[in-house]
Length: 163
Image 1: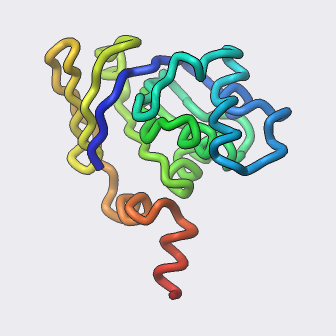
Image 2 (image 1 turned 90 degrees about the vertical axis):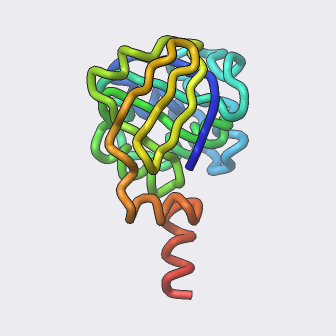
């Protein structure tokens, strides 16, 4: 799991209603949800994002209600990974279950600015910031979670296992 893209930074305590507002929960189509990604935070946020870009967040990202639509919206926006100070527990699990890569950095997230060009090696827990020349280390994606991600999420993983 190797990604390169521009950092799109958001703040602390971004809840699932900011990620995908309740009014948008009439579909599970990733593209439609992606068109409204972060609309609860900023109406036209999605217009700043290009496919392959990365989201960088502060503390407690994904707090609030448990909704699988939130990681689906992020993926539908073309964002393959979220790097954050920390994640709300239920979002963390939902993200992996839906196939979204999540990396937790703690205070080191402050070494990334909005617009920085990043290269992420998720399995190694390594983020290279091309804009600053810094290498930032995180815990690597756990092996069992990497297996789920490699299959595009938990449903595909289970289908393969029970085949």
